[in-house]
Image 1: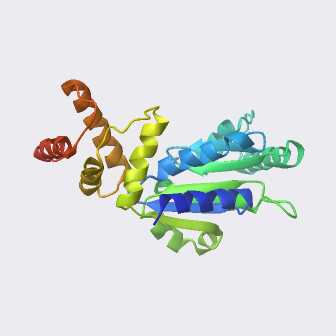
Image 2: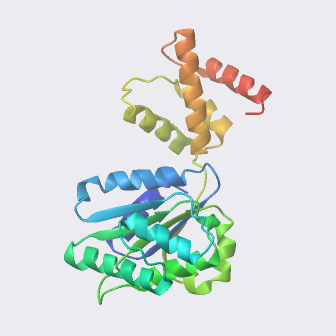
Image 3: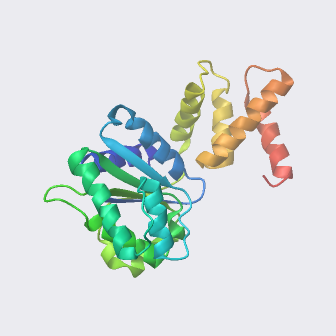
Length: 247
């Protein structure tokens, strides 16, 4: 399934203020890349959206999680009672939504690491809303085992407004991905032949992380060998060398 489709639908979900969004994919399928591209799409709307990112959602209990959220949101307070912290977070969201006219978006990476207590806190946050608008939107990026957690908490699963499973890219999308990364890096010339790109796809099976690693290695090879373009023979030799180290 297309990474582009996922990105487009996720953007629409945020603009429509849908609430909870869950993106599931294996390691290296490009979940984090999609979140970065999403942020890029909202650059022009920075005055209306505020994004907050959690990279490693591992806390020993709800108190620690709520203290983390307070710090993440810039809420200055010393009390650690759960009910008080929830009130402060709700007031923060109300101020941002109603007074500052901001759309608060919380992105949680590695969502499969969360426990049921954190799931319940997020469910409570999603309850905060006005008559016509949610006070916070949440994007959870997780590995497939997160489905097991969703199966245990039907009330949370039922709140998912947009859910998507990311598969590795096909050959066409892999080639487009390589071209896009080179363009973003400021390279306007072709440095991989069409045959080389096909070999890159066949080796990486369309996993974005593996594509990036292999392309970076090939660029280093090109610099070392003083070559301006990587052809299929160079890619084949690199793959052969990598396979000898089980890379």
